Image (cartoon, rainbow, N blue to C red; front, top):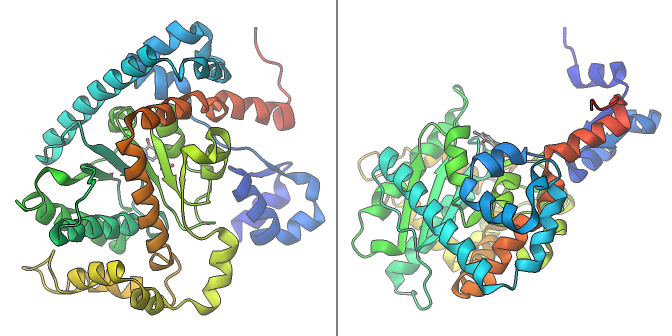
Length: 395
Ligand SMILES: *Cc1c(COP(=O)(O)O)cnc(C)c1O
């Protein structure tokens, strides 16, 4: 016997919601369309949040202090008050304070990375971070392709206006998810080659941090410059890592997916690095996806795949990444990683441009924090209560 649990849940429920606007719309228009047509009033949206008590006040007390000085105490229970920080965006004194706190947090994270991996991150470099469960839809592989592309650029001498970058990847794989474990192995192998190459030097460092958990995330999210939220559009329900990073002043590079869309709306398109296919384009492309086309048209992508296929990162373990490489080049690759490669690399170049203008980057960083109020769990829970539970708040 087969039991369709989501259908049963919808029939038995008073209210049904996705956890970000896009996700709620995809449920109503796609997966559960029949139910939506029958009971439209059941369906609604409740965008996730994260608690500012843990993810700002406790994780980043250094940054919480000048925030309290500027906007007062109330933000712990009313995160929309962070908006008041906007007045301080142009203030050189505040920007200097912001940067010195971020610098100290980056030194703290560099210590954690060195302790667990032995890799030395230079706190002056751009900290480029992707931490989340390892899954093909989250596309840690796209991140790795970009790292290999940077490695190729260094070896080709294309280093004018170079931005030193420390790439941190972390996350657990489900015990039976072999491909996810292969992805971790690939990240570690690429890191070993890149980090020991004297030609690369300090320009690029790569580390995979083991046993990713919330305690590590407290240190990580308060020190990240760039938050990688690069899932195949339509596949990530909401994400909450994206919110923790934003709240602590990281700038997002992301697809038009999940709560990324709402993050971009809150902070403004100028302060978000958007790239890639949209969910409807992913659906449409499924019918005629030909990865080889992207390879033929893109020298950079071809260079990256050639290096991987030559076994450059697995000289002593021939063939171990063949499964990954075959999946990337398959017309049936559900995650369409190669389709977004060019757009991702171009967005990363915009990141480099922005990073080189330190004043602009600091502005973007502060604006991410000031615009993160809507991603407090207090707002989420208030919506659940107003629309669904109808409980009286306790005094
Ligand atoms: C926030 C968090 C997640 C969720 O991360 P996403 O990027 O939203 O997938 C997973 N694990 C830990 C330890 C976290 O702190």
